[in-house]
Image (cartoon, rainbow, N blue to C red):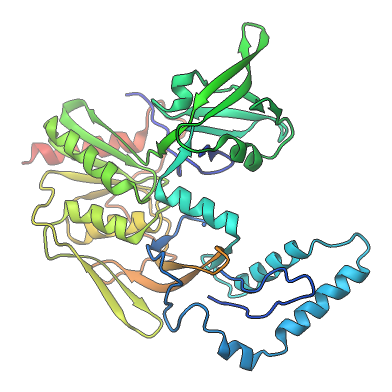
Length: 425
């Protein structure tokens, strides 16, 4: 069998897809930099709450009177420190950067790696990624051998970039005739992004025999859907779905893949969650709702006051064929909710390695300046009441990944397990 390579997410690591709380009242310094600030590590199990200045677990974003009363001298001290640095520091200071780092330090001081803040641009990128679509050319790029070089990792299938002729290993040297050599990856990406229907011209260097040739490639931008699902029918009518995340778009992609495999008369299904870091809580719920019959618990959460909320399946149908879930140490968060529900309800067999162990839920609060803060608001438990944070979920069939194997030994074992399940029907 052909060896499979699986990834933590299409936009993970250095690769970028080309489109790829607390409110501190005051900070009214002499330069009036910021008046209200606040607001991914694994992509967290995140509630989909892009609320209109959202309501938190114990109050609303913008509930500043309490802070003004208790810390009325805080903003004065911050501005005093800033002014002293500006007047005296040898190298000079960037006041905007200092404010951002002060806020980041305040949030980080909570001591929770999943509670964090976003600047305006960081939050826009986060939302764009989680929504799963953007306006661009559909090409993944990364730094090359140095950070002066931007190279194409791969174009998405049938994307504008692929159709225009972009190829892996192309070196992008100019965007609309503007030299981008030495420019940061983020800035290059920003130049390539643009509205659906507009044109961008990329100048690339491409290997041709022993030479590098320079090519101008005009590309018409379009709305690109980030693929989070890949699927195929393996030998012996075994369905296979690989999931790289639980983004907004994943629900429809999963349903389409499942429908296609059913049309091909699959006899059983393998869902590959290896290296899947998680995503939205309501998306994983919707996917489990496709697999488990109506009236069963998917997951429940408890906040710091002990308030319990349960998510119960509501679809009248369920998946009634043999099912195997592949997991490993990078299957986290929403992936563990899916795996935990399947295991606790005995709907399938888990194969692979113990999962990551993230049992916390975050909510993102959008603030007045379009920045945001992401806060851990609750713990989640599997249907049988297991709190898996720091522990993970043990597979039913333990198989360590063998990097030296010519095939994917974990997938091979999953196929063996599901074949036996099919034969026993």
